[in-house]
Length: 297
Ligand code: G1P
Image (cartoon, rainbow, N blue to C red; front, side, top):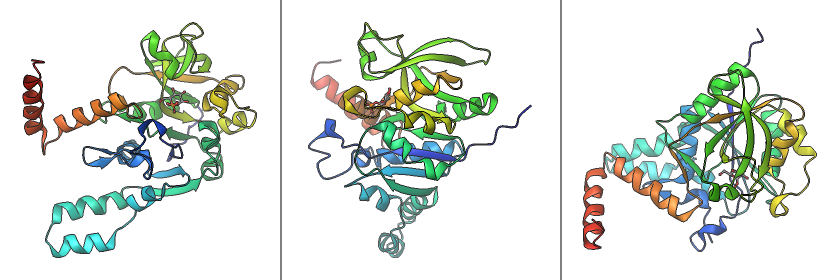
């Protein structure tokens, strides 16, 4: 049987303008918005590292320099924490810079997610690789990416994270038609369309911001014309890839937050705060008191 090489590289597109969070994102990248005490993108980098992918390419653009600073060493801060004897904070800060090998490429002009992924071609070359969208936060205990990488090693083909959503939500996502396949826990994707209306959607299975791609995606993206919203859509590249080789879907049910959406951003913040060893118990009390005060409980 053909040996499928282990994937080592991840790509995080982070060139989007973050208009849904204005004015908070006027002068700072949306990927740097804090979720409790870490910027959103740090959760995504940690997820990649936990799944064994330490070589991470971030696709950036104008106004995104603070992402690079965040994952870099900060000798002044480290020196300050050292002389003050604040060891716990020092270790935390040093870990951020050491956990992964981060690389950065700029997208030029943000022409869409498909274009952002194309920028990674020279970095990933002939290797398969993972793409993690920074708006999607995944519960680390669920291990979606890790399972997808295992499925790639089993099949040798691309694997895309899917989740069933309510019919009225499908127009926010890429939507797929699926059929059964011979691999356990996987479905075969037979067609895919970006953000369809409820009537046009092939199913309620939505694409969830985690992808494992073979390099065939780059060839497929070359032929993509501007699609939904006038952007070069990754979904349209995947659709073209279906003509060339199989693409599988990995379905999961829980543990995903869309932090590009205000309500889900707050839900992520609340859940992560409640789970925190540091403030979880006190925060649960704060929430209970607030709910009582408003007559909610
Ligand atoms: C992107 C993709 C979409 C996918 C979604 C997942 O859309 O284009 O296919 O379902 O991410 O979060 P965006 O939310 O960036 O508009």
